[in-house]
Image (cartoon, rainbow, N blue to C red; front, side, top):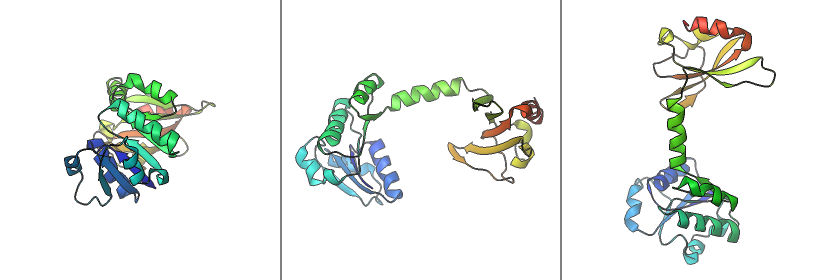
Length: 215
């Protein structure tokens, strides 16, 4: 994938490195040369000093061949304008604009621009953390016979293997989130403090699960 990032902010620089690590070709544009100091020395993509809304700059980096354009400047209007140019004039398949003011996101999305807002995400995440339930049902299919349960690592099972929280055909740990990274455990995976476990549980086994958790 060929990606163009406009704005070498901390987000832009971090995104450039993530995309590069996944094998994508990355070009990053910023009006300030010093902004590129945020990029590690291992970045081997193209850096261009220029204004992202300048068509000469965009055409110099062959925007018409880009698979994605992500706008990360510090100005919502610039991000939205550039996103519209990339989408409507150059027909870039994937266009994403960073929007600081979440109140503007719906407006820009009505123009067909995909937006992200770190403020909106932060508000949602804090709300989730404050309302977090230690035994939280997060999904129930239509037949109502199975639930997905989210729990904090049970004190009684810290240091124990996942298999001690398993019952064949009734209870299975399918995912663990640890240090903000999710992975699929095996039966011998050790449960650690502050883990968040996602279990698939037969509705008929909910009380059995609570007993296993010491509740």
